[in-house]
Length: 458
Ligand code: 4AD
Ligand code: MG
Image (tube, rainbow, N blue to C red; front, side, top):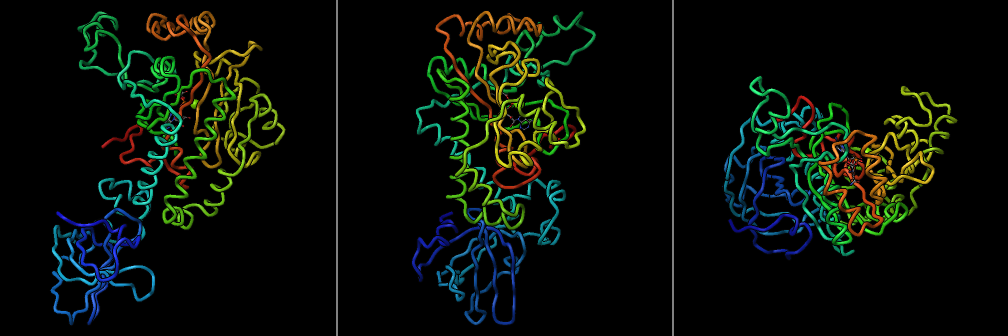
């Protein structure tokens, strides 16, 4: 169907008087004695195109064309809007491609986010989701551009894997047979299964990312990760998109610099490329959003040692549900207090106790901490998990033994420390959490097309 994008009309690509064909969905309709006004949106922009019909013109507007949600193909002539802002379309002919009944769930102008979550198949037609998903797309492109411009190789790591990267027991099993009494034990069951051994959906592409980085130098992955976490929170989904750069010859301060630069790059791209969407989020979802993001781009992030962070949180006198002491894992309430009340900006917390972090992190000379960092941001909490990796074969092996890991399942990973081992670092950015931060959306379910959470899939 030959037609043009509404965004190109609104951007002034075509001069007044041009005859054009557009396709889209009816957003609003005002019908008076002499005139019909229809706002059409084709998804290429947050703004709608106004269709105008002077009833004396003799153009017949089919009834269906005035129904909210109906899809139309319209031919018309571009005229400058009498209000002086941009163009509207004087209709010459209208074809209703698909009518839309009065039971269309998006009749009301404002609907609760909870209500919209029940209609994922339609909620993208609202202004809110129109804006969220365009920003999401611009952010994804900015990420590829950021790494592409800096000689990173884009790697696709496997989604089905035999090794658990984070070792937190949050892997979804991948199996073609259900466990039954037929098998003597788990081992026999797995032996009969598709891969002949235990397999699951990857929680992180890091381990394979390291394989690639120790050959290509700088790599990144950008794909889904899966976590069977039973936490029903505003920032957890069972399937999320994960950006994971891995950089050879980078130590912790180097990777922190990269993470900060990348975050700023993404934020700047959205501000530059999505001004209308950012105005919308500022108005509807987070007052001060644009100032916040400008400040992100123009100021250095804080870097605070875990030990200092614990001290600061204790000294703050704030009341927390979970106890604070050296060695405690920071809970969301602590993370948010630190970044929202103390730092009031993004903060890297570094050098966590080794007991609360993963086996692969570089052990610091103090024997107690690892060269890891989490990036915490106001409103969301942790958006990045990051570390320098242990590159010493023996130290890595010892850390795995302490955790009772099945060493044989990680022989590939250990090999990287045998053959030309190098200091290297990487991080994982939760893409949806980053979208929440940039848009001011407060529930992760509203920045992903079909959220998968415990007890909920469709
Ligand atoms: O901190 P995490 O667990 O780190 C890793 O997986 C490392 N292997 C990454 C690496 O170094 N390559 O996860 C990284 C980020 C978190 O900071 C969070 O933003 C996001 O992934 N994340 C989730 N996002 C949404 N829902 C969940 N259930 C998430 N779990 C982690
Ligand atoms: Mg983490």
